[in-house]
Amino acid sequence: MTISNRGENSEPIEDRHNDQRLVTYSPLLSQQLFHASKKPFKGFSGPVGSGKSAALCHEAINLALANPGCAGVIASPTYTMLRDIIHTALFAMLESRGVEYRHYKALERVLLTDADSTLLLRSLDNPDRLRGTNLAWFGLDELSYTKEESWLRMAARLREPAARRLCGFAVWTPKGSDWVFARFIKNMGPDYECVQAKPFENKFVLDANPDYYERLEETYDPRFYRQEVLGEYLSVSSDRAYHTFDPRVHVTARKLDPNASLFWALDFNVAPMSSIIAQRQGNKLTVLDEISLKLGTTQEACEEFLNRYAMRANNLRIFGDASGRRRQTTGFSDYDALTRALVRGGVRKFSDSVPPANPPVLNRVNTVNGLLTNALGEVRLEIDPRCKELIRDLEEVSFKPGTGILDKDKDPMRTHMSDALGYMIWALYGDKNTIGERSQPLQW
Figure 1: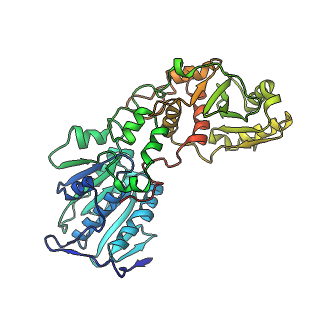
Figure 2: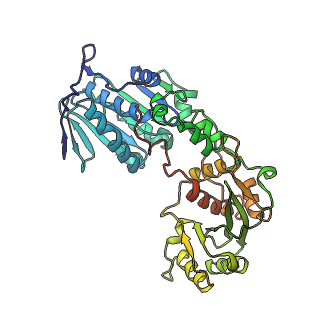
Figure 3: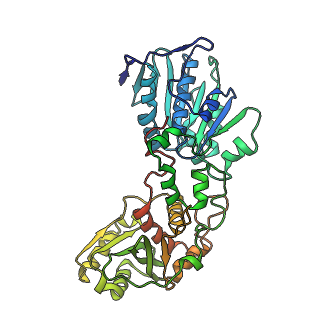
């Protein structure tokens, strides 16, 4: 249990009209509108850097203080995200507002001692766990990454008889025409209100990092930039996965540079066994070749790689599917087999750039799209015409309707080569902060 006391210069100010302590941060216009809303259900929709985390935590504190003796919930899609927001935002805000609290870590709850109000800390990855205590309020983080069932379960618990003000609220970054868009914007009922933050509104982000949005423009493809940075609602997963690929722009003959390192990325799949060979040439990544074995093993893939590149394979860098680290019935993983085969083939200098876990599919696909053509119109990925399977992937791979899941059922030959490319590009260029602006310092 940890106890936090008021700081010397952080005595709270009382609001005589509603007996609620005033927010001590300087809210942006969109945040002001969000806090001022008196609707039973309200949302804050905004692009990256729009202050959603600050709005979420301050609104939670406001409602906890406005409902003494009652319980409320702060919830995130996963426990990792919950831990991030609690440690980087909530406790700091409680301290800055001079609110005394006790954190019961094992029970996943925070007690505001003066108001005798409880903040329960929960994950939304299992809606069945959301049954139970009556609530006066709840606040959900990154709502677009959760199921509608979770929202409905929380709304059903909004029934605390002693509550002075019942309220359910959420913050999120747009994610296409999903259930959040339908409920809060397209078919918004009389009990709902949604505040949509404007892009570039957060002066605190721009003051601290003047090139923040320019850097995102270099990384994101045009459509993803419109969603994440401009906060627009787009159907980003309803058609071709690699929508920025244009063979007239990206397919061009390239020769291997004997002085540059060789990159080899693999997708471990028996039918087909797929891998690509690439190099960095200037500011571009060039895919020079592919190896596709309709029914092959890791050993056979390595043999074919050495047949083609044994004389160029020193200073080799390996990328690929993180699941290849799992040990097979032989006691060795795919990467163990790969290492042994390379050593037997005379390769003495190579490194492994495989992460401990694969990135989320949408993040990986968006990073590939951004390298193909970013929001500035820059092309940083080129593919040699000999890579026929990869080109077909980039032209034909699509999402299952209404989802962010790649359709692997339509054609069993598809997705594998582009998956290998995606693993490499994510390792080289991917933003390891996978949702919203979690890795950024809290923006007020």
